[in-house]
Length: 112
Length: 115
Image 1 (cartoon, rainbow over the protein chains, first blue to last red):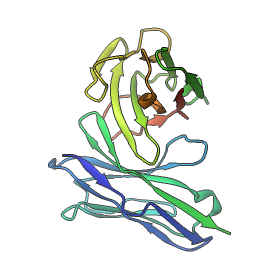
Image 2: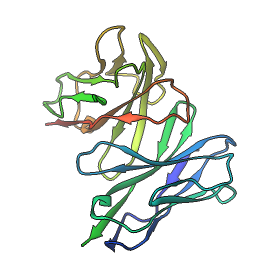
Image 3: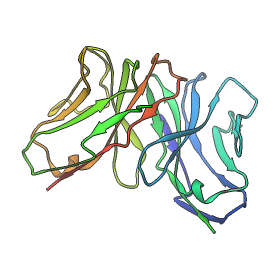
Image 4: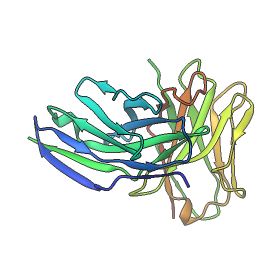
């Protein structure tokens, strides 16, 4: 079965700190793509970062980076120098055929 | 800079009524996906459509639910004879080419409440 587990329902950190959100997944496929999406209170899903499973190099996007461990099926998101605007739900997902398989999300609160 | 537009943003229906949810993709996008989100859960895939074709409806209940994406006009997700369990946020996403690594553009969703 294709599943995604985000073990941290909620996290909070002080502004400017670094925070890591965890994600593990299960798939029998060898080729797939992994994503982190952000859902602010406006509800619109916004792509934060994506990783191709056949690439060993971890993706980075400004303050956002991932730690991708394919053998362990782990895909954590690190947010450096966190900002108040980073407060949102964060979802981990991966591709399976035409679908994205999603985790239940982590609520991230950045405190001033 | 029109992104994915979904309407209505909120929809209230009584049990047994019909719900029609609309999605206008990003201009030029011909691939549309519908997802459902229950409280405290991630999104669950429902259906993938290209213009005038249903490509994958494996996540959509066989009864009461239907989707279309006509040649002209928005994509429509239709739920007949709604029940309380249909209450959820329904999200539409679109993409240009339909490839698996492609960025999806999401709308802000329609929150369906069934009384």
